[in-house]
Image (spheres, rainbow, N blue to C red):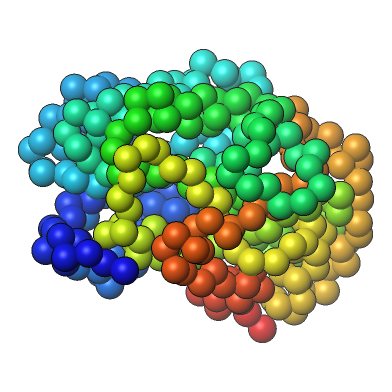
Length: 297
């Protein structure tokens, strides 16, 4: 429920990382909301410079920051820890300090990679973290910076397997390869759920007026359902009516510099109950994305 103050508040929202998948989806949905948006790139704000962030926020009376910026090149991060740490931890620390000083709501996006992927049931927010990659470690370090600084009315949303109409992602890669190849090997022993960035973007924009807490809260978000990357690829080919055969392979057959979680299913009960939201089924998100891409057959 919205409280009376929520109904009269003017939300001036700064979206950082607005050119990425989630930021782009927020931008597309923004016209549906009676909020004032500021979509910025690194040319507009240097998120590693606290005074630069603070000056922009004061000048534009920002009272909500949505931080979609991240170093997400998971494999590259293994040999580029300095830059991964700069974006995923140090910049988040600066944003948190400014949010606390100016009483700004901060919504920060994190990842399932903070877990080791060895669980046997869906991860709840309180489960012990144990990242197995530089990317996961730096994202967890960013979470911990926010929690230590504790800007009021701020949340962390952990998500997984993000894809979108925008940017580069698994869905687009499968569509491209599905047209080029007769057969593809896709991993079947990594299990989780995709997150359609448009669905996450809508949830974020819907819950902004309801975010009121005295300490930083963590929430999980992905679409509903459970599947492997193999299952995901099979459904992409099926919906797009591509004849490429998908062959199930194991993780060891496709080695990567960064270790991936074998199990990254997220329990979404907390965010659903707190904000009274319904989360779409993963196939419905994929269907919508393929239609937007003109690939639904």
